[in-house]
Length: 305
Image (cartoon, helix red, strand yellow):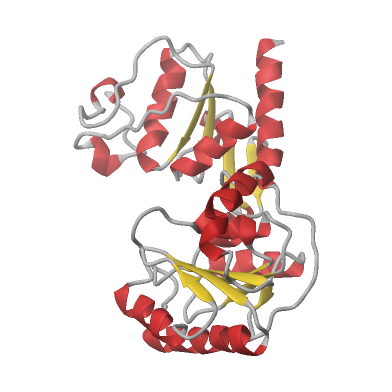
């Protein structure tokens, strides 16, 4: 979640001061609904907050909601308060709220994004691609980045699904002579990672084993196409920001919000379901961050005006 705030600050050309707050009990359990006594709510385990108050606060996460509004109050309303993700409490209390379209919430101070906010830019990916190129230089082209998530509250990445995906990837490597760049996440699990490693051991593949720095962004920059599991809005959004062919692996499970997100992405041409083959098409890179940054700039200018 922090990357969403940092990405917006970077797109605005700002060098932010990062504050990671923690709440004491009972505010921790009752946030964001309990706002009384907010000056006593911050735990010493987190970063302190004190004057001078900022011109702009960009926040996300449940613990930040009441804290952001407290900062706005302490500043006499001077601080522009931007909240990323649904704050649950009244939207009118914030200057701007950024939420995905699939949340189904609108309002005069709401910016609805197609996907998740992130820090990915062409410049950033170019640097990461240069950094990680030696790791995959031996792979044939075209190169396919495979971004693997895992089970969450909506989807299940079972060993059976992992075997099915691995067999399809191996076929692409052997029959289509594609180089595979595979990066799992913490949710992938050791058993599923072992299935990937065993199933692709004789293929042209680089699989990150979870040790050391993650080449995830390097793979984003170096890929000619993507296969991404459906369980992460952010992974799909980041891949879609490249404008390269993006295929989504649909896993068992789902939710109304995830379904709405994937349907909208497919409808507008950002991605297609993965069915064992890689198709070629182009689309305008997904650029939600610019939309949000432009709105924040307008608010800042009007404040200064």
